[in-house]
Length: 610
Image 1: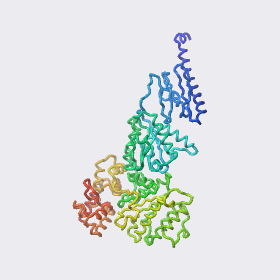
Image 2: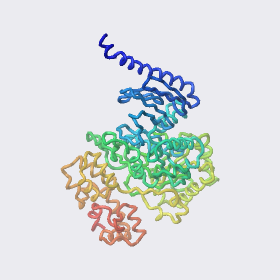
Image 3: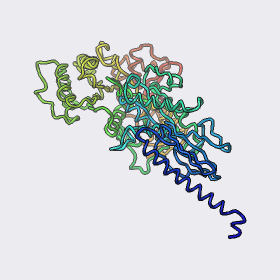
Image 4: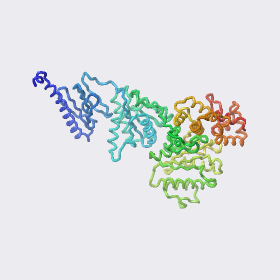
């Protein structure tokens, strides 16, 4: 006891107890103050001095306080920092949820929000409802990269007060990505309020800091002065490149380590041979062998637009149907803001194409079945009316009666119609339906996705009377080097760059051929030399793919001459024939713009056979 008195230890003990009590009192006072003022958006600032004095005053834009230990200090959110050395900092929260500190001289405030952390950056995504698909795609990309994105369609809970939840998420974010489009810049309502709130928060940050990241989804005109002062990123030209630049901002304060985003996802190679997917036909929508390409995003962006019309064109076995089915499955799983009807024209019988009324009755029957309407019958098809009137009546009375959710009509393998007598009338009607969307409520909510393996202009006399010179055209052809690399890694051939280059030269990155080659290399590795023997078409494994091309060349002398010219290194001067060979995937342009054979396999195997 004497020792305690002599060394004034009692003062030290009581000082410590006093600080703890003051923190407890500060929390209670702050909590009670915020409870009274929360409805008015008023919070409190609490300053606890080294002498134990407690000062409380109200401040706007502060939510309920939270107490927690962070490192070597106690933190009262919207209140105080109590450090281990008994120094104290007061903190005032603004709209962003970032604390601006009023510290003592030993703890000066930072001049900028630039920091190094291994924590995942929190990213708020602001968007117009019409751009929900792109917003959810961005959400998924950020999440895969290691960020912590917030999107109302993903994070709001049932029964949650959405305005309060959105406000809290906005304040708690490290970054806000504002998605700009023709819909969002002209729209009034909460999306504009969200953007204004984010820009108001931006004013609280130093001029050299990044908080709001404006991103355009289409070629919209931005007029907001505060946004124009920021560097605006575009995603509609090249999603991947734009995304990479967004990552540079979002992850700029992340220390190298596990949290650092990777540009290439780690492969998930097969575990056993029964996991392998047989090449040929559409790939299972759940298969991890599916390689997502830039064109996936282009198609998704096109069909997400108001009155969107996308023509997906690519050679046979380039992955068109697999892509469409994958998009279809994603649309159902993610509850995208449109209904989807898919009609595979290749599966229909020839008599269905005998009359224009006949093919459209088949399409409406599929529509009725897939949408579970149960409405299409003879009463809804008037034989005395034209196709336009009958289809429009069905949309009015069955499809959009009581449900104005947009409808996506996907017609796969439309080139089946090219050889039919009704081709001109069929595509003229399709074009008329698209044009009607400009004025007719029934057609305003209809979007189109058409896939073809052939070049339409060689089969349709007047393209202006078809859907193929409007909307967006997406060309689907060979895998890029990176996409081939991803496919190779899925098969367990990790980082064998020599093998990837060999495959690219041999089969030109054609998706089906890459798949077929990898499949056999995995099952029969000892036959690698045979599989890469172009003269025998890989000991016969590629013959079923090449022979239809060979037959077509033997049947068409003009095409044969054009292909011979290409194989001889002379290119092809006939534009129409060159386009047909290109549409078939047999030729491509080299770096100098000359027409050359698409791959070593075609060049070697076809030479001298026609």
